[in-house]
Image (cartoon, rainbow, N blue to C red; front, side):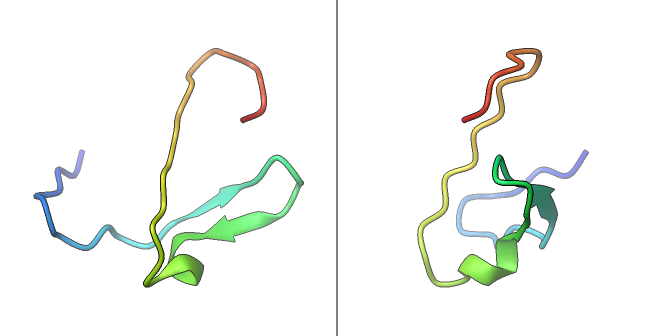
Length: 45
């Protein structure tokens, strides 16, 4: 597990969106990003 410190740049990663497309963190560089995980919720965000 990787722990980030405040102000440290997050590593790039790709996740599937609820629209069926892949979303790459680096595509949002310079913008505010909020990532929410709801394990076992089985509902789209």
